[in-house]
Length: 388
Ligand code: BGC
Image (tube, rainbow, N blue to C red):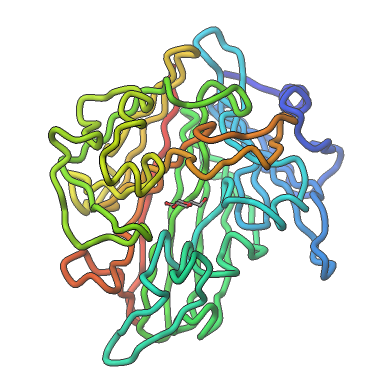
C-alpha cells in the first residue's frame, strides 16, 4: 500500500499524537522506493529534566506506520488498517514525554537488562552474589529502578532494500542497577515491505552477567482507548506455563495448561477464563504468566502466538526464537493514566506479549540459562506480523 507523508500526519492527528513536522527538511528523511517504505524521519519530542533531547522517529512500510522515541526505545504508536482499510493506533501510550518519565507502566518500551522479575533482586553467578536494584516489593522488575525503558538510546536510521528501520544502541556500565559487566546493547527495529515489525536484539559483555531483553508494547487491536481486550482471541503454542507465588516469582515448576484457564492452545477469548478462581489467576489478578513455548529455543523465529480482534478483523502473529512468552493482561491499569487518545486506561484495556527467557532464570537452575559471558553474543529476534 502506497502511503505518503501527508497520510502519516493525518493518521497522527487522528490518533491525537503529538504534533510533528514530518518531512519539513528534517535530517535523515529517506525516500522509500519499494514496499511503500517512508522515513525514518526525526522530530523533536521533548527534553528530560537534565536537558537531554528526546526525539520521535516516524517510519512506515507495507501499510504499517509507527512512531518510536529515543527515550526507552518506546513504540509510541503503531497504526495498522482494519478489514475495511481504516487505520487505528493499536498500541497504548502517552502524548507527552512527562507521562512516560513519571508514570508509565512500561508502555511500548524496551526492557533490560532483565525482562520480568528476579527474586529479591539477587542472584549468584560464578560464586559471587549480586544485589540488584529492587523496584517491585522486594523483587527486581524489568531491570530495576532505572531500566533500559528509562534510558535515552542512540538512534541511527536506515533503509536497506525494501526495509526501513532504526538501530538503537546503548551501553550499560558495569554495576548499573547492580548488574555485573559493561553491557553493549543494539536493538534493531525493522518495518518490512509486508508491514511486519521485526525486533533484533544483540548484546555483548566484558564480564559474565545475565541478560533477558524484551519489548513491552500493550496491544489493543481494536485501537487504543477503545475499551478492553477481553474479546480478543489469543492462541499460544504452549502446553506448559511457569506457575508463580504470590509475589509473581516462578516456583520452578512447569505445569501443564491442560484443563486450566492457561490453555490457549486452540485459541479462546481472553475474557473467557479471566474471572476464574484458579489460584494462579488470583495471584496475577488475571493473566500475568510465562508460557513455555512448545517449540523451545529455536535458531530462527518460529510461531509462538496469534492475537485476533473479531470486531476489526486485525490480527497479530508473533514469531520468536525465545523459549518463553509473558502474557500480561493489563491487570494493573487502574484508571489513573490518560492515554494518547485522551481517554483513561482501565484494567484489561491492553495486553502484553513479551517474548523472553523465563522470569527469575538466574535463580532457577532448571530454566534455560540467561548467562552471557565475554566473547559470546546475545542474539534474539521477534517478528510481529499484522494482518486482517
Ligand atoms: C509484568 C507485570 C507487571 C507489568 C508492568 C509485566 O511484564 O509481568 O507483572 O506489572 O509488566 O507494567
